[in-house]
Image (tube, rainbow, N blue to C red; front, side):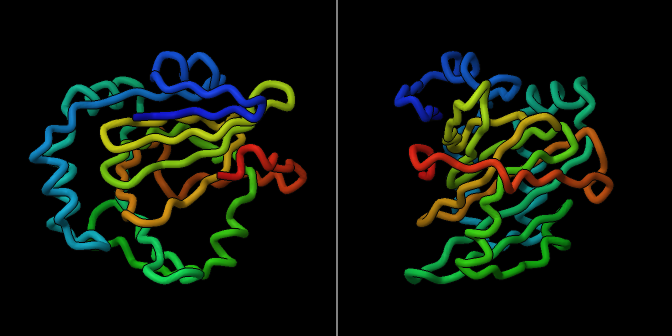
Length: 202
């Protein structure tokens, strides 16, 4: 179940209510049958080419068609594997398929440094397959929020959205992302002067 917590203390738990309060960002759900979920949960991580292809081949066709209509035709798949010990590093692996998701380990300090508000210069749509996507959002005025998206749900951002990631512990996060530009052809603008409020630091 998606959840939005705002820096003024308001909390929303339905996709419709959340979408009304997050500016141009959008959230929604997709068909994710239980057998598909269980298979994804059992895949080897970081993903192999076979595992990545299995996910691509079984995605909700209605969502994939909608993405194509909106011009989001470039895709990647990846996972973020949390540490097994307190204070350990995360393993990140992303690519167009399992064979090019070269794992990269980042220390806890490096992950913390990545919590810089930024805007990626692309329209991106992310489908959560396991774990959770946790995004901090700069909203209208000085309002901020933190958005939690779980398996079977998606989040859509555009190039104007100032946001920052939070990487959950416990279960690994696996996601499929679609873009309107080829990965590697766009960058991001960082906003280090934008201070994250303590109320949304989780």
